[in-house]
Amino acid sequence: MNRIIYLNGEFCSETDAKISIFDRSFLFSDSVYEVTTVLNGKMIDFDNHMKRLDRSMSELKFSKMLDHELIKKFHKDLILKNNLKEGIIYLHVSRGVADRSFNFPPKETDLTVVAFSQEKNLIENKESKNGISIMTLEDKRWKRCDIKTTQLLYPSFAKAEAYEKGFDDAWMLRDGYISEGTSNNAWIIKSGKILTRQADDLILNGITRQSVINCAKILGYNISYKGFTLTDAISADEAFITSATTFVTPVVNINGKKISTGKPGEFTGKLREEYIKNSLKTAI
Ligand code: PDD
Image (cartoon, rainbow, N blue to C red):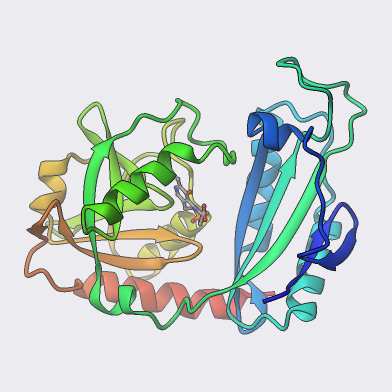
């Protein structure tokens, strides 16, 4: 594969793209990112991804902000140039290039902006059909998980640990409560109520999570923004994850214990359908 990628205002082949070894992203993971879903060649929830990008950049005190129209234009160009029908556009913004110092570089330092496309079967895949298995482990991340930074070593470690042990993914536990998945939000359904943890500093407030909350309201489901424990999850009627790349995907097994019958749940399926229907309707 040789994609056309975007780097600092220009498009080039992925094999020609070059970034300085002094980039703050390389030396300090001093960067934020967004992942926007593409279905039928159109973007889902683009404006909400931009709002979260602004928030991440301002929480990290980036001295410059980016123009959303410009970002939209190069996202659309990437979709066209790479003939992307279904998949994602990954956007990465770093504080820029500066001699190595723990202090932030001068305010006038240009940000580094990179974006590329990835093809992926998002609607039809075995995970959404059969459900996934999850293991749990301690959440050892810093306490600003609400900022979408590229400091992803611990989630990557957790995912690799899960794979090594024969699971599809991991949910992280902090103070006895499930915080979230390695790269997704965690949900359960119990006694007719959907539970998702409150969006605070300890989880990323997923854009998919926010859309799925709307879908749940459309379908007339009760939602409670409450943390839940591993015991709650294992005894739940249904469990699922949400993210830009998984939409609503059923969880059928946690730490080797079946959730209910061990089959994808009925309400989870309805939520996924509603989410895809709404997303296709509002895509740009
Ligand atoms: N991850 N929580 C974490 C820790 C995440 O990394 C993600 C997304 C989510 C869900 O957010 P959203 O609904 O906006 O995709 C929750 C992306 C997909 C990734 O890192 O690839």
